[in-house]
Image 1: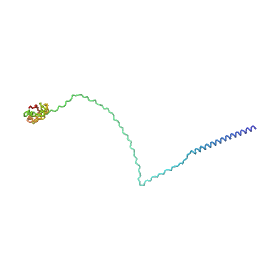
Image 2 (image 1 turned 90 degrees about the vertical axis):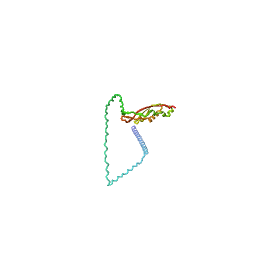
Image 3 (image 1 turned 90 degrees about the horizontal axis):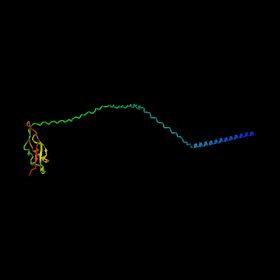
Image 4 (image 1 turned 30 degrees about the vertical axis):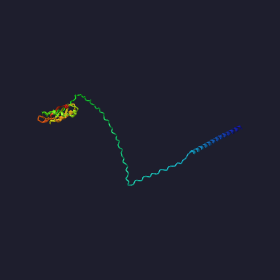
Length: 226
């Protein structure tokens, strides 16, 4: 009796445990199934769908018309060979040559060379007869020729004249060799002597007239007295 009770209790206990396990299994399955459905529903809700429209195919290219029968065949362009690559010539620098520089010449000072003497003037023709004054040279300048301005300024003095006598016996190239102190009296004396003075021409050995050479005269200017 005791053994039978004990065996009955074990069976009931096992059945109870099995029911509990089955219940837990059903609850777990139901829980998992519901959770999965919610997830699928949420994903399906968030999923956005759209239609994909296929692009139409490109139009077919029309083939080019065939060339006319009479057209000459088109020759392909001739092949031009590329120009040859010319290497630039290599320029070599000229060799540097050392030039020996000669020492400067030694210049020895020399005495200055005197300039050549001028050529001697031609010899004067021999004079057989010298030029002689015609008349009294003192009459060529007189007190009557006294310049009025020199009288007003009370100018007086002795003037020395130098002049040449030409081949005709006339006086030329008169110049003042010593001044009287008054340019008015000096100029008047030279002017009067040139105009009034006359010489007989000098003659050479053949009797031909020649220049009479250089002559000198002195004249004294004195203020006229009343």
